Image (tube, rainbow, N blue to C red; front, side, top):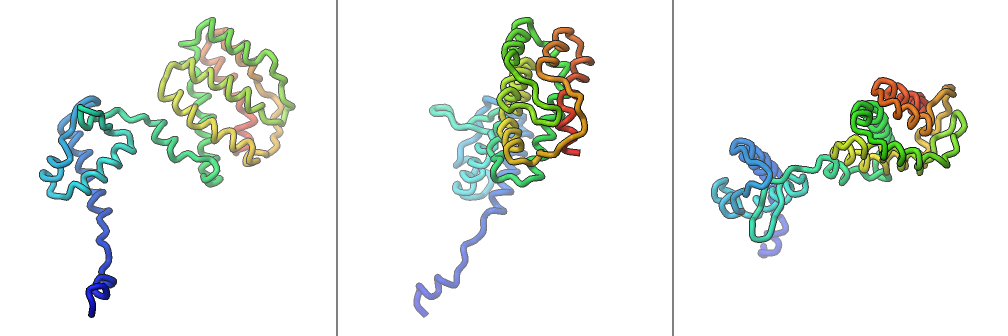
Length: 234
């Protein structure tokens, strides 16, 4: 039997489980050492020696952690702990055209829940200038018929401004994450279900309620604004 014939019977060793273990051990190490964003972690060669694995395994594990946003490499400094961008991490997998119908529906529901729930932040942090900007956004909006979906362009501009008003960077990140999904759900017909509810609060109506600076009123108005959407998914 020739060497080549012998080689064809050999299978590559699957090291994925080893990489998984190293990845978890590294995260464990970061936690036990109480490392915080900006702290430098040991070099590849030091980690490989300490853990008894090859640098290739260490490198692959570190690359995974970089993809997760837990670490970053900076020239002349080394590899540092990083505070992950939660919305950014999710955004990498939130590709509307390849998500199944249930995942799109889940994302759509998440956005509805967020927008009802953030009423207190909006009311607490809204300024007169913000209200002027919201009024400007909706001044030429034509209210849809009772069972129609709201115009997507107005949804993006108006609701995007509400997320901005919260001042919460994570919420703003989620808004950027969910808008493409929201738009895809519209265009795909996934929520093209007619609804018997004909009493909703328009964007213009929301602005008027917001002027009262009452979180309870605004929360109810937002829930009413989204009522037809809720009816479509139930």
